[in-house]
Length: 155
DNA sequence: GCCAACGTTGGC
DNA sequence: GCCAACGTTGGC
Image 1 (cartoon, rainbow, N blue to C red):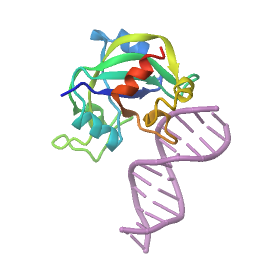
Image 2: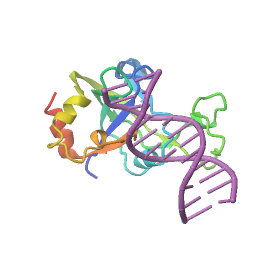
Image 3: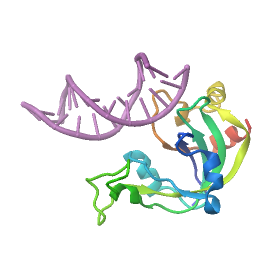
Image 4: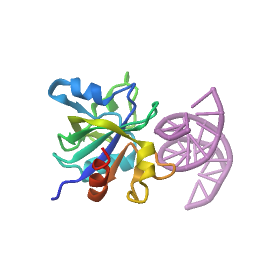
């Protein structure tokens, strides 16, 4: 199967690309996804080695700040079973987990961020890129190979 | 199955 | 902090 590409959002105050770089093995379980469409991408399509744009959302300058890769296939997100956890889901049972995650491994920072504003400036070239679509709220979204290349060329 | 109310996301 | 967009919930 050919390599796929993804864009994954994180609020940098919660977990930034710098945090990912500091993790043991530079790898982190991407927990807390509680959206079925995003879960299905992880469950059905993500493969080890897929490319990831690490996107900072809900911050001063939203945009892509670094590159990462998918480091595992999907497995159950343990935080869904922890009553103390912010992402606890009382409706999910261990024998039938509702929510999954993948491990994400740091690759590198971009020389400078590719901001949302920059992406929008290239909307012609990036037709269909979900992150610049109006009202889009998905935290995990696919990036077409031609868009991946075009965005990297903006670095 | 409809749809109003509500909660969350996330840019600005 | 505002608020538009949109997903989810729950009454009917």
